[in-house]
Image 1 (spheres, helix red, strand yellow):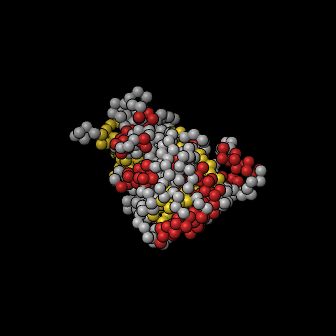
Image 2 (image 1 turned 90 degrees about the horizontal axis):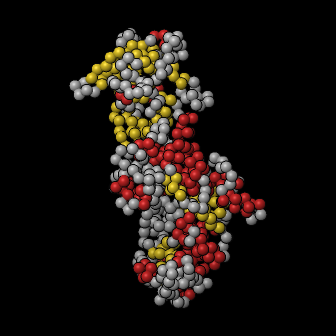
Image 3 (image 1 turned 135 degrees about the vertical axis):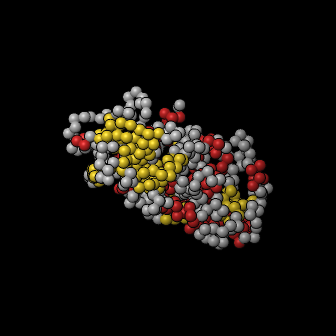
Length: 553
């Protein structure tokens, strides 16, 4: 965990609790519902929960809130575990709300016996109609005054499967005139005849989130149950249930969700993107799922850094995507080996360099990284690939790259001067002819000439081909989550595929997940679908933030 400057308000609470002897050990939990893949919003919660217990010597449980069998899958469970591990965190116990189904059922029976819960035959529509409004009290259900004995009998029969889905619910008996509408006899159990990914067909009644959440915390002796702000109204019910059940008093604390510009973090909308084929899948590199960012080339260190930088607050706000991109650039700049790759190639011929000759030149692996392994060997020859954008027939003012008569240094090699060029029938440049200064080799330059510009290159006879995928932001507006038809704002240029880029030899042994800086082009990672015969590189980020400049044009 990267240390924050000062304490956030939850850390302050924890320090006070420890100082006063309220707890000997801090216990938190990360409780995702396994109905989708984790995203950048979950990363903040993971970083907070695990980071606090790392700092204060406690532990964190990974608990799956698997109380809705209709939407939950083993695939999601496994992906969540992989993501948490990849982020660099380790849970003490892997737990499931379904582990507690028997205990939760017993808790519900306890409430019935205390006269604090009843079985309701009303439909969901009827229950909603009787709820009232924030300014008007609700009305009691006609089934609210059933006897304890009748409620116990009906609840047991619900468990045995005697009733169909939606036929009955179990509701807490609180106050239909309560100022907090969530306290107006909330539903605790509903009937769902559905196969559960862990318990199979053993259960046909399932606890609602509000009933399973606090009680699971209590069973695990969670000291600080950390949620996002939308759960503030739920805290009163959380406390009420713990009090009435007379169980371990876990305590809920809320922090503000941080929304990220140009992204969607709603699981429902992310699933829509997947189902409607707007993206390749949950791990599409344009998605802000953790698996998508991992595939794109983000590092766990950069994501944790981002989570720490945005901090923990009590008020929601929007965080600029540029900050996340800055974090990954900053980390990759330190760790990514430098390599040369030409994405839009034009052939450059050095007319005074001997034909059929090649030589080795040495180029730095990473000047920013200590003990980076020094240099690597790059093959140089008469014919090279250079970027099309590095030659201009009629140079602009302050143009320091190739142009007729201009001098430029080839990265780690020689100074060259452009003498001529060729075009095809459509006016496109197809060859650039240059001469080189033999005495100007990098590391042993005796030419006395200083070229203002440096460009990268790849030897034609030594180059390998690769597919390069240039990813950009998935949406064109800052807050697509506010739009009902958010797919209208998908960026049509969020993916550009280059089928034949040319890469230097050192890249041919790269494996899935390896990360590089393509000199002058950006940061790239090897895609999971890459193979030795078909290398695929995903652009993680450009070298600089160009989005804001482009979006203002």
